[in-house]
Length: 423
Ligand SMILES: Cc1ncc(COP(=O)(O)O)c(C=O)c1O
Image (cartoon, rainbow, N blue to C red; front, side, top):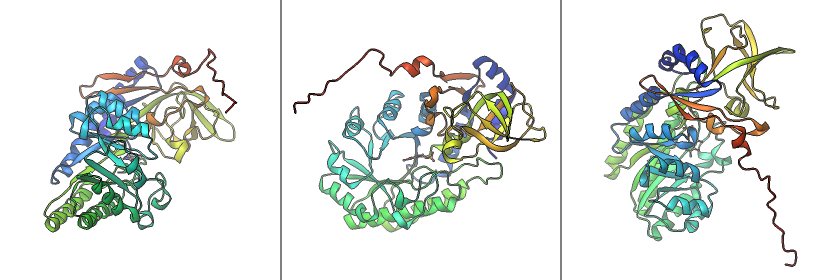
């Protein structure tokens, strides 16, 4: 079931008042739900010593959310300088931070290494010589190529730009070992939004076997293996949820077997974004227009600048209409924003109750890769973000963008460079 009943129960009775106070559109996140999921993750992996979730900051890069993650003992997986800055701003540092970049620039390495450092997760063997100062702990992202399949969001491993290939992975660790690195991690991330626990199990098995293989070849021990993010959530009502308990039980068993064969065991890290926050967020928007031409269109006051997933991947997000949850769904319509792009649609040919202007629509499961992916095409501005706190109060955790923000990077005064043509 999309969007937990708990979140609906907490949100729907107070939503009209919240919408009247803050004005739509906005994303709202459920602190209780995020904490419940975090606690559940820790509990299912409690038998693996040193289990740690590194929350994928890209999913929901807001300091209040990161603070919640930090209170649960989580680290942060960052993919850019601003994400590292954000994580450091809330007090995370050192090995609480993982820097998983790709096509990494020197500037990014320099920044990552400054200020008490972070765990460097290298995406390619050639980057070894480009890290300004090799730290004592290095991790590589492994790409198994044709040995595994991926999925639509992240692509097939053999076509994906990420990671070190199978043929290069032992060599990569050999090189850094020769250069004095003494602590090692191993990482992979193959699929996104995967609800099939056996796929995730194959990934965990693959990575732990690889750690064993590399360890034996080079006589090194891995401090951790990181199985990435990618745990899926049920966006559609008929979607079965990921069987987290079964998955964790089997992974725990792999770790036990590793320990009995190798007389040590790495820690298990993961970097879920969607699983941690996806179902605990919703985009709240108001119906402002209805248009009946060849199809019926419900126009709302949010657009793709708030949520790209449907336009970008054809992703499904369930929609409730406040106060009409139990009414018959006798309208079939596209729910659209105001962008001059025909894929600016939150739903296509969706069965919905009769919708009037002024009705509040709740677009479910926008807590990950939602606001964060928004953009400013067509001069459209991103909406505010709210947090429904555990005590039932609501906090503004990001204001909406204004035209001043849109104008902030523009030069109205001329700033001209004249190339010297002589050379
Ligand atoms: C390297 C890396 N880690 C973690 C994640 C988080 O993925 P998810 O939100 O599907 O768990 C992503 C998502 O793109 C990623 O690229």
